[in-house]
Structures are given as structure tokens and as C-alpha cells.
Length: 243
Image (tube, rainbow, N blue to C red; front, side):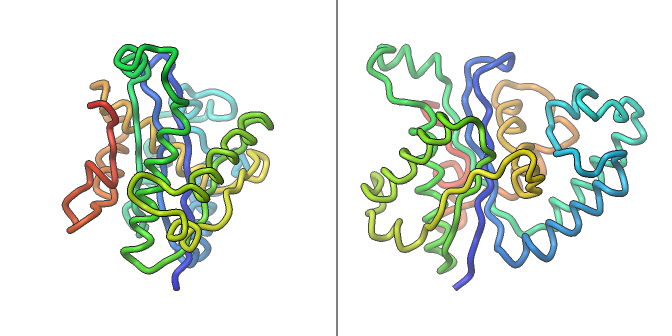
């Protein structure tokens, strides 16, 4: 039975508007350890003055916090082209769930709404389990550590979904397919989490009509999990809630 890792990141409502998104990708343990890790580390060593600096798309776009060297466009192009070639090579399945928080509050009368992280985590978890059922695999979740309170709340949400099941999948199936939820620290330099950082913001930019930064959305869109009969990606791969 193949073991898969799901690396996730989030985008909160900010200058991009009122959207929240949770997104990332599933990759087999074998491909992660033997392809993604060595090749992404080599890319960083070949293209970055400080290869231990975690990739962070916002800082890379703004040429700040260690990414000042990207003000040289030739270096920017070289780095992003190398990353994109790797993404194209990887056997990954992308999962994204998004919600317009302002629309949600308006439609459901604000004070009666549930936590948006909880809602989107349920969608991602359910769809990841669907994928694991389709490949007869097992999986683990990895989300970059935020702070103790947020980590604790997310852990509670995760175990509530595992033990209680979701709308479409019962708890026994979920517990059979999923194991741990881990919170790698930024200082851990976890390459799987770093690559996941590129995903939710790329999809939010697409939703709001911003340009496809360095072609990342188009690349990840091709990797979206297609779901049932390989043709239901809007349900199982890129779920836009309330749209």
C-alpha cells in the first residue's frame, strides 16, 4: 500500500480581498524522498545565495527578506523556470478549497457561521481520502506550524473529522486511510511545505482575475485531482465554495 503525504498552506483574507483558501498537493513518500527533496534542494543551492532560506512566494515576489537577489530579473527567471520544470516532472495531485468570507457572512447572517478553516479542511480531507481510496493508499497531513493556539485548534478540527466522519465518508474509512497531522516548523526547512506555499495564492489570484504569476496557476491547474471518472475536478480537486 503506497503512502502519500499531503502538504498544505493557506491564504487568509488580505489585500487580495475577502477570499480564504486552503490548498496543497499529495505526493507519494517515495517521490517526495527521492525526487522532490533532492531536486528542489539542488535548485535552491544552484540559484539562491542562502539555500537554507525557506521559499515563500510573497517574499519572492516582493524581493524581500532574503530574496533581494531576485531584483535581478535574470536570476528570477532562472529560479522560477527551474522550479516549474520540477513541478511539471512531479507526480502530484493538487487540492484546493476556497471561500469568499464576506459572501459567506452575508449569506448566513454573520454570527451563525462556522470557522472557515474548519469548513475548508473538511473539504480537503474528504477529497484527499477519496484520492487515497482510488489508489489504495494511506496518507498524512503536513501544514506549516503557525502558533500554539492555531495549531491546537487545527488539531482539534482534524481529529473531530477523523472520529466523526464527513458528509460523504464515514469515520472508519477516514481512520483507515489517514494517520497523523504534523506541523513542521519554518526552521525545519521542510521542502514539501515550501512548495505548497505556491499553490493557494496562485488559485486565489486566478479567482480574482489577477495575472498568472510566472505561469504557476496554469501549471498547478494541470495537476489538480480530477476525481470520479477523471472528470469531476470542480468537486474533488478545486472546490470553490458558494460559487
